[in-house]
Length: 266
Image (cartoon, rainbow, N blue to C red):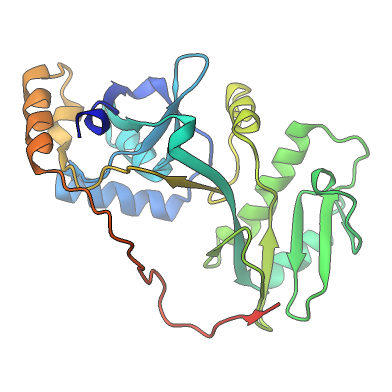
């Protein structure tokens, strides 16, 4: 128990960085929820970077919300590479005019044959099983240009339509009025390079499976807003957690989605 509690650290707000963009509506909702409750229930998950800053792996909206509220400090649960698995999300979204807009954009090249996983930005899967592989139309496009195009793809639908996230390895065919967008998994080294160059990935594309996550700590917002950090109050909370944390070892299956027609399996 002491080992997992030692992973909780309070760091200056300017020492944390995000690797993904945020969704404006979701950020507003998170700000409102934290402000109304007056506390942070679940600390974001972070990994120490080579430059000493803390990279948020999970909890981008909670982190951005605390920063927007004006918190001087962010409590994070610091994990090592052995504590997580890095995967990717695919996005199931409505087939709407946003896709026609991308088809007509001259910055993108559309092919029906795969040129290698590293060569394309996205794979679009249609209801009939056909696919389009989307890449940059510019030959030899650099990683920064490809990243901007990737962000443009995700923003073109996520800003207006609901997005259902699907684990990267799950093979499904979308319904007739939907398409599935698949993105390749990135390595931690690639993600850290993107961040150190001052960029972020699109929202909701990385998936981290965390072992030993701490939940429901109820960290008061006042402790994070105060210009002077109260070490005694923080230590009192740590002692409280040490006596009240419970490890659930049982396997649990949680339904996280509302009822909807199950997509046809490939």
